[in-house]
Image (cartoon, rainbow, N blue to C red; front, side, top):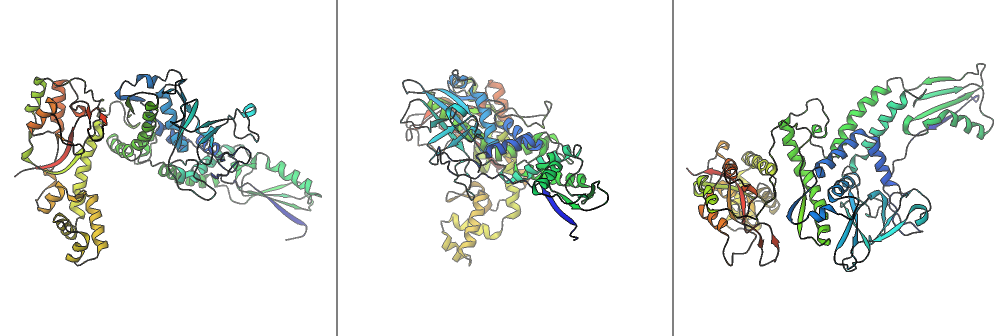
Length: 587
């Protein structure tokens, strides 16, 4: 290079923010991020990526959009939360949003003067909370970006964690998802479920900014500017020139480099040359599609249509309904259960006896005209069936002895009907999978297990090693042919080599005694005794017809409240339950 030409460059790389955790020396709390600003980074991503924001909002809707319903007890006072600015329906939605955005949620409780119950519950913004390393104290600030924290400047205050042995004043309850610690982390703060997609979300934000600034900036990344008036005489002059050229391009809006050369020349007008061509917008478009797919995967999205996103090859309403059931089972339900656990714990601390649950919503992809199955209402258990109503059960169904039971599943009393019927399809899918994949070796292992043989003797009998036997037993358990040390009904049927065509399978329902309760010491209620004595097996249509005749939802009905004499735990359902069974008819 000629000594008459000198070169410098402007770099616009942006450092990715990490959730480092270190102790603040002044106040003793653990910082969330090197500059204590990691939650603000997550908020910026939420505000900057339309895809990410839409998914988080829709997840929140699926988890808490329909609010709370009372499962048992008189819980209206808890839901009203009269001393707070928000009732529990509103707080539930706020908790669900923080859960999706940050991976955790928190509330603040206030004990009454007597210390007998929590009189007031308040939602806390998770981004406003920092905690001590032992997680016994929580620090709240209105502005964690301030260098100096105090009550006067940032409204800094501190609250203890819940301690039921110290029932005075206010306290914080904080829930976070378990997560693996990375370097420079102490495992104090939560991580969102989409943590693996943060780079994709950041890229989506940058792509959106690129298209906006493409129209505003005169030059972009990959640009060379030649200044023929000679190299600046001082470092200060060089800095002034480069800063004036960078202007608003100092951030990721024009990520990359602008190369500036200084040379002596007759023409003093700067020259500008593109180094990367003019097809950068098309390359961004290709990248955007990959980024969007990565965001969907990071969020465990089974079908974009569930989130209002229509793509080529989108599913129809029926398929979307099936995919929603998968997404609800694998993601939504587990998230709901965690929030419900917190809410019911809060209710208990508030002196309420009973429980609440979050009401399910329909997927966005289903229109009001789409055929759907309504959720089962809460079990009443307050009014017994009359003798005339009980007699209706005799008019439907068939004798259980007419059927061979292949597989059984308990139905929890508050299971939504759409989940019950979705299980029917899973039962059929399981049979199909077994018929395709099971090998003679697995059948031999199952038969020896039924005869009481252990792994060592099975390996010896089949001339193989214990590892192969263990692998087979694990597969048999997955197929539910072998459970809790015994072959199941389906396993027994398989060993009997009963020739079964898939078309012969039926899913039926029966009422029977639960296996997790001790023998009855007095006597069961008349409804239960009568229904058990009928020894009937019902189809789904039978149960629906009976419900219509007795004007009662039979699916959710049980014989009444029951107290387990061993555990002394009281439940709003009795010693009996509806069982979903995969059966074939006796020949």
